Length: 92
Image (cartoon, rainbow, N blue to C red; front, side, top):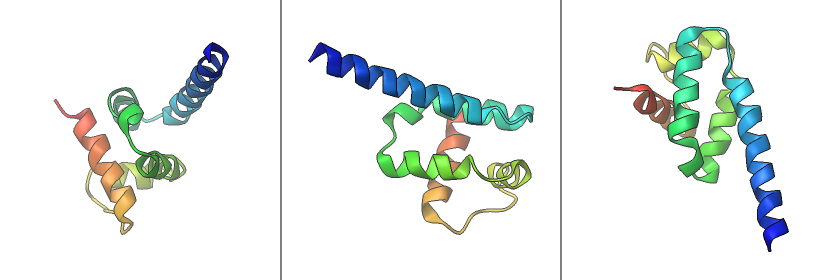
């Protein structure tokens, strides 16, 4: 049982490290918003939201910034949900 939990925790740590790296975009605004979501909300997200977040991380920086600034909203409802969650996590 202990070994299973240890392996599970190692997998979670690897996943979070990978995502943290992907959240480093080179644009301060994007970095801050994505990291805030990862720190505050990602661990409690369901599988669908986590999958949508990973899809979102593959978007070009400019497209992602436009969506997060609500200048260009996605048509996919799952992506829209994650955008909302990221904006809320970055809020005051």
